[in-house]
Image (tube, rainbow, N blue to C red; front, side, top):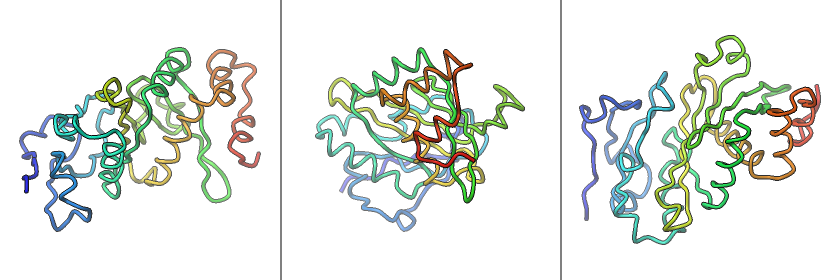
Amino acid sequence: MQRIFWRSVGSYAKQPFCSLKLSESEFPYDLKKWWSVGFRMMSRFATGFNPLREKPLDSIVDIHRLKDRYPDDIASIWDDYHIGRGHIGATMKAKLYHLLHHRAKECRHFVIPLWRGNGYTTIFLQVQTPYIIFTGLEDYKARGTQASPYFSVCFYTEFAESKDLVLIRGDIVFTSKLTDSEAKWLMETAQSFYLNDVRYKLVERFNKDTHDFEFKDVLQALDMPIL
């Protein structure tokens, strides 16, 4: 059996994540699966990191060990690895990522209502590929670019050409602001507004024809009540 590629505390000192290590007893999933592809065992994120500080893919997984895997196998391993670890894992086809990247050049910002209880809180997002950054709209209004991100998403394109696969990783910066399920919903919903032609018209309107933008149209697109 191949050994786990552990990172020492010192090697993560300059990274935006905590450097705690997980023992085998703390890891509830199939360890053989991760050993076989050389995943780096990491802890949960630390609060207050800079979401645009690069977290290289090879600091998460041994890329060379994935090169001979089928795309579906890579996607399954990547998704399962992130379950229950304080991160969100997903994948998409390269063609869809290129569409998102192209559209984000023209329209970097949008707002998404996050439903909670009997109402919603509005989340402001900025797409700066390979990142999407989410924060509260009220925080952004108050602090502008100094507003702390609630959640950041990074797209890894190392397998886009060879496997037609882009790996997606989301990191919740403040667990007091978002739950894992809320973060996953935001990530999927943001992608839908950039990849769906009908929904993207709202993104265009928000960025290019602001005077014609109506937030109620976003609510209707998401089947949310207009309060």
